[in-house]
Image 1 (cartoon, rainbow, N blue to C red):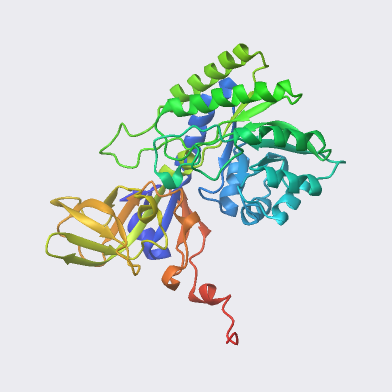
Image 2 (image 1 turned 180 degrees about the horizontal axis):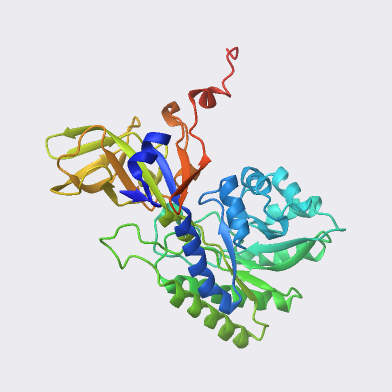
Length: 414
């Protein structure tokens, strides 16, 4: 098995396992496909940094002309070290710290998405009248999408956004906020959404909201409908993906129609894809630690798991897995497991019956929300991340050492 023209076994030998491999040619292709759909509509594309953000990756995304969303000081500093232009960075977050608000006020980002009334109040005390901060309001229009509850960020039972009943309050604050410049509205309903109608509904709701703001003297120059465009995670379910072109075309049309209906100028559109651009480009390589034939099932335990990919345990995410070091023949259904101290199930997989300890297993579509959500649970070290392109490899993040894990421990603390 080759990744980016390089043998998977060779990569595993050089960098050890688990190993996250990012195919940069696939990333570039995803960006090009996204731009081909969005550019004709003048839609702004901002990469959602929470999916995966490393300094070298951020530098490459900047070179490709994307904007960037960050939601912490850590992500912002990553972008800054990559030389990402501040004016193309947006600060997100439903519970921003004063340090993050101060960074926005200091023009370390080009705009901020405000998530609540109290946050807006704090921001007005920090913002600088001599350099008004471009500000979007994240609304919660009550729209839900059919996705797992843990990744659903719209609807009445989520923590995100400004409720309709608080719109008068935020407008009152904005009227006196000399350090802020109202720019537009934002909403996001969740991740892994396969229904175009969810995005259309969000866009229409934001246009309707822009009319309410316009009546109070606030012109929404832009609306951002978030990300969450569903990607295929299992080749046996090829229809489990969103028709991105049809979705964007429908959203653009809906915005034009809705704007004419409520008599406001059509706002500029923005989207925030993360997984769609980086997820399919990622493959995680594992070594098999043990194959256990229990009473009813065969369990294949690999050297990764909950600590480097918590998504299957968090919300049942699935990733297609294949044997990377032997022919995929005489397949049997197994339970693929990690080695954390839980019943750490990565999912069911069809793997060769001859699979043995030491064999290599490859899990696909792991570019997003794996390394970025990794931890040192059980004091495991986080894996390396290597990029491949055109038969060449580039280390993006080195494998942690035990010393890295113990670095913050205070030996005389007790």
